[in-house]
Structure formats: structure tokens, C-alpha cells
Length: 503
Image (spheres, rainbow, N blue to C red):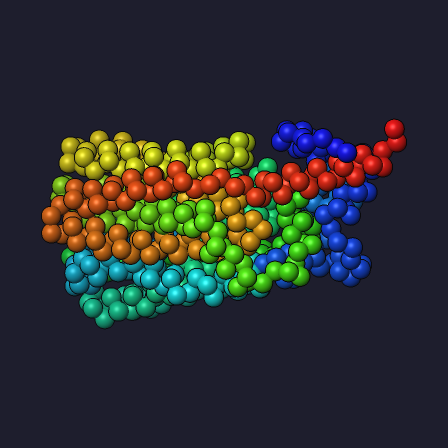
């Protein structure tokens, strides 16, 4: 019998090329199929995958008979997904960062402009379960096409009737609501896409890149909207608003076409041993059984709560950032945009670093807890330095962004570990539902505190919940099921090889 192996030894064994391991690995992780079945392997959440003989691919162990394989197409799909996620996130924040300008343009109160952001959160809650069911039963391609289509359609609706009055605002609200529906098809995709297309050593990095696109869209929204739409009279900025909407609509249309051309449900062969093992259990998988299993998973339940607090705080701070800044620094809308850009850019750096760190160390709980505590500390410093000077805000906002938005992919990947073999789309969907719910509550309460008192009171409210989230994270049990599945599969292969190896 083979002895228990360390993680490094197992990874080395996965890349070995002995003839015995080659013949056994296929039988170990793949059920026997007819020749026709092999053309369309089944993976939970992707009921029908498409074969592609023209794809340039690299085998996980440089062997044509291997049970796992990495396809170069995965990077194209990830890039296209990140791009249309970017376009959707841009439309989420394009109003909020210049809320005072758009409030004057449409002749509505600031709270009405806040709802152009919160409509994203409201739309998510009733639609998340149907969309995750669709992801599990129809696969990535259908979800990607629908998400990019709604994003494109919403952008063109907003362009259809740009006028500086409440009728124009009503049209904008309809278009923004369609974009909000698109978001439901987007937020749960990064972890699912990474698991279906990327190998065990790169899955966390791929998930981080998927989240990276959404963060970059928020960053561009912070930067572009204040530059394109200046704080002038409504008649003077009408053309500026039209150009902003036209650029967004054109870019979203291009991305919709790219999704149609590039997206597939899943690769012909799975990218990792964990995904390969799931093929054997396809006949036992049902969506509602998966949802019930997740509801009974206590560590995941705690993660849903803590993820919602952290990400909901980010949504609230992003939506209300303009009001915080101009409360202390009048007519500094452009500077508020640069501060928002700093928050998100540093968060993108944090996301990539955290993804690389997880791929290397697999220390999911420790990293999540450490980043959560830093997020709380960053929010405290941001709160009590907001009225000192603009350069100071840039420093504290950058530190806050590195941790707060850097936490987003950590939550997705930790959830995938805690809930394996359940669908990553379902687990990430529940995480995002929690984030949207907390985002609505936090934005309404923090906005009211800013209006009635000052940004300090609103930010202290957010700090108190981040402290609670940090404490709750301590109690999440670190049950890394996906890592165990990868190791157990390789140990089984070693055991069978030991049996057939001559003494």
C-alpha cells in the first residue's frame, strides 16, 4: 500500500509519466464510457460540453492519455468574461461617483441617484436562485450570453432618451434595471469558470482575475464619469452624458459579440483531479439537493454572513463616496473619483496577490481572517482621517481598498473549498446574495447618517459591522474539501500503481 504523501510529493506524482500510472489514472477518475460519450463528457453544472479538436492544449502531465488537460482557450474565455464584467460594473458606479451632478441634471434628490446603484442589489436577491439553477443545468455559455446581452440592452436603453428632466431619469432607471439583471448572470461566474477550465495550481489565480475585471470596471467608473461629466448646468452637460452612454453601449455590444464567438460550457477533458472525480457523481447531482446541502453547512453559513458584511460595506462606501468627499471638500467631484480609483486599483493588486498566495499556500482561513482584520483597521483609519487633507485620504483609501476589495476572491475560493463537491455557481451566488442584502441595508443607513449628521457617523456604523465580521470569521471551521479530493485521488492512483509494480 502507498504511504500518505505530502502536498509537494502529490503534486510531483501528478506530473509523473510512468506507464502504469498512465493506464490507471484514467480508470481511477473517469467512468468507462462509450466512444460517443467520450465526445461529450458530463460535468456537474455543465450538462453538455462541446468538443473542440482545434484547441491548442497542454496536458496536465504531458500525456495524451491523461484524464486531465489544460486548454489554452481558457485564457481567452477568462479575458472575455472579465471584459464584459468590467462593462457591467462601470455602469453600476457611473452615477454614484458624481451623484450631485446627476441629481441636478435629472432634477431629483441625491437618494434617487443612490437607487441607481442600489437597483443592482435589489435585482440580485429574487433572481439569484433561478440564475444559479440555469448555470447548473445549462452551463457557462448560456449564462455568459444572457449576461452580456442584458448588459448591452440596458446600455442602449439609457442612450435612447437622454434628457435633463425626470422623464430622462425614468428611462435611465429602466436601463439601469436591465443592467442590474445582467449583474445576476455575472457575479457568480468567476469561481465556476475557474473550476471548470483551470488546473488545481492556478484556480485561485483565475478566480482572482475574474473578480479583477469587475473591480477594474468600478475603477474606470470612478475615473471616467467625473472627467466626462463635469459639474455644470444640465443643458451644458447634455452632450457629455450622451457621449458617456454611447461609449458604454458600443463597448458592451462588441463584448456581446465576442461572448457568442468564444464561450464554451466546459473543456472536453477536466482540468483537475477534483473536477474529474465529479464526473463520476453526475447522476447523483440535483440543484435543489445542492442548495439544501449548502444550507446545512455551518462553516459556509458563517462565511455567507461575514462575506456579506465585508462586501456590503464596499458597496455602501463606493455608492456614497462622492457625498463623503464633497461634504468636507466642496466641488471636488473629480478628486472623489480619483480617490475611488485608488481604492479599487489597490484592491485589484490585493486580489491578485491573495490569489497567488492561496495557490501557493492553500491557507484559506488564515488569509481570510488576516485580510478581514486589516479591512476593519483600514476602515477605522479612513474614517478618522477623512477631514484632515486630500493627500491623507489617498493613503488611507488605498490601504482600505487593498484589503476590502482584495477580500472578494478570497471569499469565493474559501466557499469553493468548504462546499465541494457542490456547484461553485450556487455557493458564490449565495455569497453575493448576502452581499447585496447587506449592501442595501448599509447604503440606506449610512446614507441617512451622512445626511442627518456627517460622514464620520456613517463610517463608524460600517466599522462596527466589520469588527463583528472579523470576530465571526474566527469561528469558521477550515474544512478544505476540494484540496482533500485532489490529494485522495492522487493517493488512490499511487495505491493502484503500487499493486501493479513488480517487486
